[in-house]
Amino acid sequence: MQPPVSAFIGLGSNLSGPEQQVLRAIKSINQLKNCSLELTSSLYESPPMGPQDQPYYINAVVKISTTLKPYELLSTLQAIENQQGRTRDTGRWGARTLDLDILLYDEVISHDSKLTLPHPGLPSRAFVLYPLAEIDKDLNIPTVGSVQQLIDELNEAPPLIIS
Image 1 (cartoon, rainbow, N blue to C red):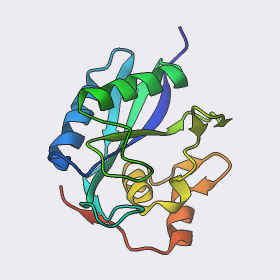
Image 2: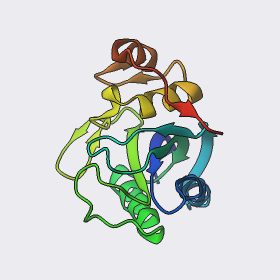
Image 3: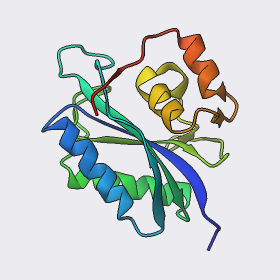
């Protein structure tokens, strides 16, 4: 078995009680075998990406320590999404009960059709960068730069912290 590595997971929901969906997903991640929940950000509210005719999102980021390999972690997170009623028929950036994204997995850089690491949208999403900075202000993202540098370059107001 490989030694544990750190991974950061982005959580988001804008359907069926979004705040409860995110909190339930954090609890599910905390109960995963081969994973240990290390840090959890505040919950943030942000407008949807893409179509604006949908509710605002509740977002958070967690840091875990895990012995799961990247694809095993991805499958495990997708199972949590499915348990919480996630459907994949809403189109790109459509409303969803739960979205779990592996943002970073150790220093792994991966570019394939199933998993891209670091997450390709990470540098341009305030709803990910601010929670990341909250739990690790000195985090450096491979091939991209520091979280603080990305926030400065984004030049966007922080999303609203709701709890």
